[in-house]
Amino acid sequence: MLRTGYRLLSRPLRTTTNHTARLLYSTAPPPPPAGSKTIPATFQVFNRETKRLQKERAASNTEQSRQVDYVKDEVAFRVVDRLLDIKREFNEVVELGSGCGHIAKHVDTDMMKKLIMCDTSETMLNRDRDVEYEVPVERRIVDEENLPFPENSLECVVSSLSMHWINDLPGAMIQIQRSLKPDGVFIAGLFGGDTLFELRTSLQLAEQEREGGISPRVSPMADSRDLGSLLSRAGFTLTTVDVDEVTVNYPSAIELMEDLRAMGESNAVINRRGLLKRDTMMAAAAIYKEMYGNEDGTVPATFQILYMIGWKPSPTQNKPLERGSAKHSLKDRLENEGSASTPKSE
Image 1 (spheres, rainbow, N blue to C red):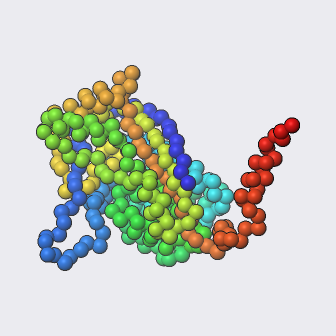
Image 2 (cartoon, rainbow, N blue to C red; image 1 turned 30 degrees about the horizontal axis):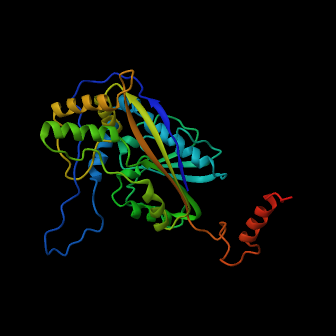
Image 3 (tube, rainbow, N blue to C red; image 1 turned 120 degrees about the vertical axis):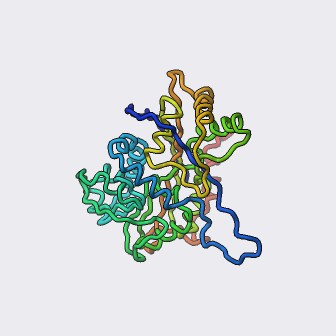
C-alpha cells in the first residue's frame, strides 16, 4: 500500500554565527585484500561513532539545537498521527533514535502509559530533561543496531528520522520484529533517497566546475520501492509504506548546511572527505539559487520522508481465506451486473 503527500514549511528565523559551513562525504569502505577469507558480517556504510559525536556536539548548544527542531518535530507529528489510527492504548511504547524527545511532544495518556526514549547520544537524550511531557518518559542509551529488548516483550516500537543512519537496516528490522509481542506494531519515518536533491545537484555541479570532478557529499538513503520487501523479509505482515515530502525555504544554501550541522545530520559515511572548499561552497550556493531559487530570493530544500508500518504476525489477525474456498464466482457477479446495466433493444 502506497500513499503520497506534500507540505511546505518555512525555516524559522534565527541568529547564526559566521563560520565555514561543512558538508562531508565518503564512499563505502574498501574491499578486503585479494585472497582474504575475512568477510564482514555487515556492510559498513556509516560510522556510528561519528554520528554519535555529531549528535553530542549538536545537543551541547541547547539554544541553537532547539531552533532547528522544526523538521524533526514535523515528522514526529506525522508518525504520531499514524499511531493515532491504531485504536489501542499501549502500556509502553519504545522509541528508537528519539533524540531530545520529538515524539514525546505529541503523545498523551490516551495513547500510552509510558514512553521509553532510546538514543546513542546521552547529551541529546538529556537536552530537554527539564521539560515535562504529558506521558511519563524513561531515557535509555541504546544502539538501534544492537537492541537489548527480550523476544516478545514490546507492544509497539516507533522511530522518527533515525533509521536512515543504520548500516544493517534489514537486520535492525528483524531485531525489532523479534522484540515485539504477537500483534505488536512497528511504525517508522526516515529520510528517503530524494532528500536534499537540490543540494546534491548544486554541489556536484560546483565541484565539477571548480575542482574538475565530483564526489558524493550527501549520504545515501533508502528507496521507497525497497521498504515493503524489507518489512516482509523481516517477518512483518499487513505492511504499509507512505511517501511524503516536506519543503523548507532557506535564505540560501549556506543556512541550509548550517542547520543540517546544528541538527546533528552532517554526513557520517566512512572515509568521508574533509572540509568543503570555500570557493566550491560559494559556487554551489550560487548554482542552487539560480536553479531552484524562489521569486522572493529564498531557496527550497526538499526532505522526502518514507513512513512504514508493519505488524508482527498473530493468530488473532485477520487473514485471507484459502484459495478455492469462495462460495460465489466473481466472474458470474460481474457478468450479471454487466447484463443488468445493458439497455434492452426494442
